[in-house]
Image 1: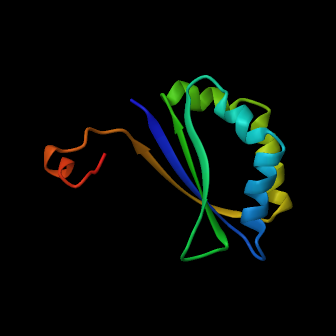
Image 2: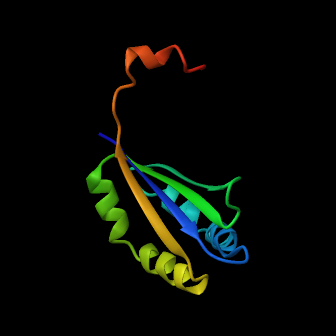
Length: 108
């Protein structure tokens, strides 16, 4: 069962966007995407709050998440969060079947 974590990074004066840009330009994002078990690692800027960036981070299972958390990249990420003085909220989800009644609203 896959796991998706939504992390919202919030800062001031564009700090969250600068954080995401540095994560990308430094190669850290690609290194995470290349980890075994990573399904998705993408940043999005909020239309409602430009000081907030959403990270959607998905993994095959808890073992893949645990192995990611044990990598040195977590220290890099923590240092960048401190550098940009970011605060976070976290939501965690496990995959579930889409109910048949909801299928009619999904355009593929």
